[in-house]
Length: 208
Picture (cartoon, rainbow, N blue to C red):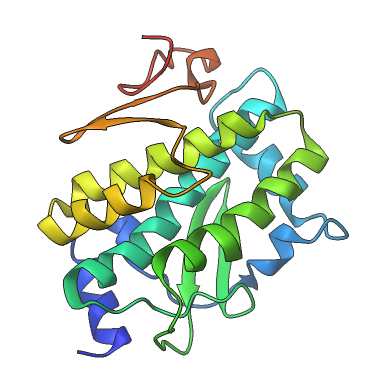
């Protein structure tokens, strides 16, 4: 099975695992402080969820984006042992009122592992770009990364997926963000979703 077939198989699990079609802008635009793409996207998400301030929209955007990336990397890795090449200049995005679609063309595999593919190449640069726009604690963003990872593992619900997730959660700087017991995860931070109207507390929230 090649990377394209592995992604198509993973895409059957749900929309977060599926690639969009039609094209868009490279995700590297979101990480570039000289671009306005990230600021516009934060505003869109903030309006869509009716958040009282942009940093809440930025947190929810980051967690949702992390979940998409974990799904695109961990799904094929769990199913076929293949990590797709999700290089920032090859992965594209587009938004419809703050709802992100991600796509990839052409589809190839990479020798990089899941951690480097998702965290080093995407989430660390995005976190740096977000903090230049809004005030968000590093611990909150790292908690969003691990919460999104465990959510992806729950949807996959495979032995390989859970094994990979536990390995990833042992790696710094994710190792101190929460506790995974079985498939139950308790994070040590809060994503601020409780401040969205009618948002409530997430199942893994530290405020519980």
